[in-house]
Image: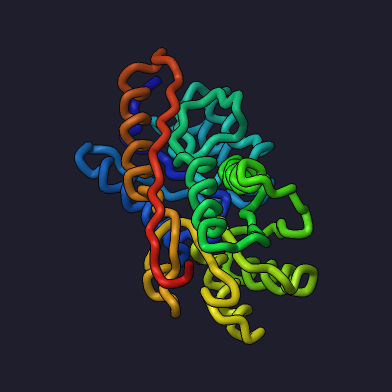
Amino acid sequence: MDRTGAVALVAPESYTRLFSEPYFAAIIEGAVEELSATDLQVALVVVRTERERTRLARHLEERPVDGALLLSVQAHDPLPSVFERLGIPAVLGGRRSNGETLSCVYAENIGGAHNAVDLLLSRGCHIVATITGDLDQQGAQARLEGYRRALEEAGFAADEELVEAGDFSEESGAAAMTALLRRRPDVEGVFAASDVMAAGALRVLREAGRAVPDDVALVGWDDSDVARGADPPLTSIRQPTEELGRAMARLLLDEMAEPDRARREVVLGTELVRRASA
């Protein structure tokens, strides 16, 4: 295949969300920075609908790129198969399942979530809830698994009344916290699967007259500017988001240089950063 000198950075998200949420901004920055040492051009492609997906597939058939980085891909998204069918190297941020067929990079989600819940339990929180991310994404599923494992290992029975789904947005975090307080007003601790959702939960707790952390302790995920700027500042699980983007770019460059190279997974560690919310 003739080289085009371009790679695509593909995300099924809106432009507003891509550039307003810390996770996307940092991972894009890391990938672009890593690729800046090459002569490759990076094209940002947003694919939200079936029509846009079909249009991208047609464009790739007529003028393929040399490779692609795919962000925020859901479990049943057919988009990765387009690149596989066309023989275009592609690397995922996250993975679709345990049987992922493409190279991928992701954080150690289960262990990070486990550490978040362990902290809440160590504070004496016995009623610990979670606000999940979009459960069509494997990373969100893994964080939920870490939450459940931590509770089970501490001798607490799983209680689905304490699990509320979000979609990583602030609005979903607020809605989830509202639902949790309505259903379980005795909640003592909350692990939110993103800082942005934790910020939404914090707002609802304040409006409900619940002091953080005295009444309800709160832990987020990402260790972003959102966590550092919250009142009180949020305890959070730090994942090396910019390095996730860099690692994706390095994997892609390797596969572009060696198209027959076996797929690889890169798992980056997480770290609990404690602040005033827990």
